[in-house]
Image 1 (cartoon, rainbow, N blue to C red):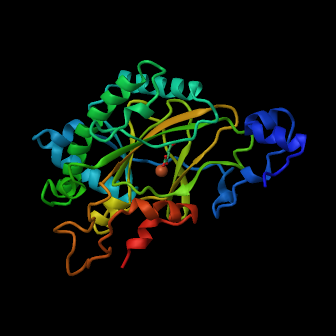
Image 2: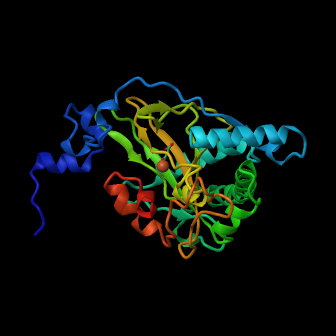
Length: 324
Ligand SMILES: O=C(O)CCC(=O)C(=O)O
Ligand SMILES: [Fe+2]
């Protein structure tokens, strides 16, 4: 039977957190974050010193390439993420993407359920894509093409940085790897010390590419039990390892635990694209990463995304399901 709500509860249900607090009400209990890391939400945290990788150098045959590959390897092994620049997507185009994402959220009704959209041409379902703003489809389509190129370069560079056969990660992910996009919108929250934007998690992708808000910080990464803030570099994106790359590399690269906090005054937007092998691919350590000193650490697992959400809800790293 449907629950009958008192007028006060009815009002609370239909208002955003921001509206509730402005109208003088307490933060409703259901918004108070209860994760193990809740006590650190309001802390002032150090900035991560994430290495900035020049993607142009990764493809140039000059001596810079070796240096940049080494920088990429150490970034991935130490921080599990990096910030590429000179990656083939112009700063002005990134601004345009931010703009259409914002417009999309402004026009989206609060009742529209959030969905992940597949971006690649043969996988997307255009009928579900918004037609308004008008430039949305065209801009996202162009971004998808640029990301396909960027992913080719980066997977090859990741393999080369470990002295592996250049195509090993790409071949395992398969031609049909899916790019799921999530347009994140974080409204201002007057109690960032109590409520969270996205709870701590690790991504189920091979790599995740996040276009950051240009002005408002949000994501934080956990390293050795310490949370770090991600610096804003407007012309860069943030790329982190997901579980699939952790397994393909036999744990040389790790998928980091991260979360997103809210800002008391400002809203924040981000666009996360999860580059994910197709669910019928069997993902396992590639040739060359299993050695006498480093035996296979992960089982072959298919359709990994299916239990990703279960682990996510329980606040655990889903890759645990594949660890031997
Ligand atoms: O908003 C961000 O910067 C990161 C979002 C994120 O971690 C995710 O969507 O999985
Ligand atoms: Fe994430």
